[in-house]
Image 1 (cartoon, rainbow, N blue to C red):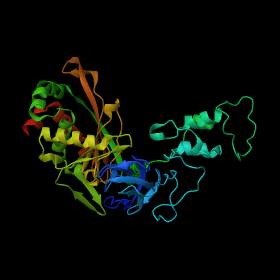
Image 2 (image 1 turned 135 degrees about the vertical axis):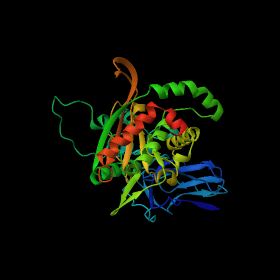
Image 3 (image 1 turned 180 degrees about the vertical axis):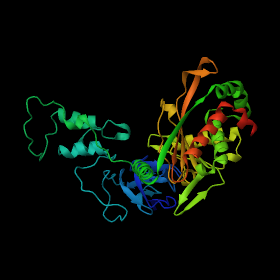
Image 4 (image 1 turned 45 degrees about the vertical axis):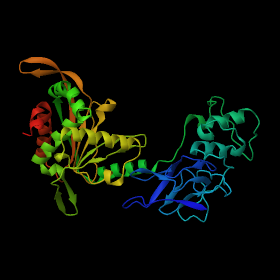
Length: 408
């Protein structure tokens, strides 16, 4: 019996995805619920699991191809009796599939799909990829394999267009070795669209301040071990900033508001987005009702969302509906930056690296651990006075952490 592997429902307002990675090759034995293929949408990545035990007899759609909900990705034979079909190249798929447009074939494909760079190199030199020894992971063909195959003299180029002679001063290396062109991922394209949308739509402005981290660092050092022992979670800086922002948002509700048509919508709930950098790009999972959470719940929630983001396990619900965002460029060493709004939100707080700097304390100069803070905001919603007051309140809470610990 043969079972089709189908593109599942991807989430609200998402109808298309890209086949990012196959975990199995045609002919591999598989078990029920085992991950088979990873799909990437403009918001999340998700895995499609096997619906039954059997053998993966056919990969219908290769890596890098766009697919719609309901498209057939491959086929499983529960008794292993079906004929195993080789995987298509990354840009190939049967014409009968309505989910994506078929691309012309430039070379015979090996068992594992070709990367865009390898596929271009094979096509440019008129090679047959199926006869080139592959040394990459899972039998994949690498650029090095192709170049080594050519240098052995065992594969003369076929039907290559004549090339003009190079000038004597031209470098010997080719453009293939100097640069690599790869398609933008769906997530990266969506990030670019949203960032540009924020710049084009909002009247964006940034105000800055600096905060003395002495007391927060002292509180962490004093309670870190007891906190971790009691709650099983590390006491970090982000919990202090989330709690500080909630105090400021409750005092300055415009920063927690957004524009909807001709209306201003003031949110009486505090769903805080915490930006997380991943290999695929920046994502902003949302910590729901953060005002109702204790320090341990905030730290635990942030840690869990961060792990899911890096593993590509975030759901659509965890990425939507935030009212305010915090981003920490300090983890990468940023001293100061101007964060871009996360539409349709009206405010985003940028944290930065902690740097020891000389500061005037009364009549004395002391070396203190200081951090620059940046609040980018939509001036259509938030006045300058409100933005500055918000950032001052955050600064006051961080410099006097007992205020947020005691709820005063």
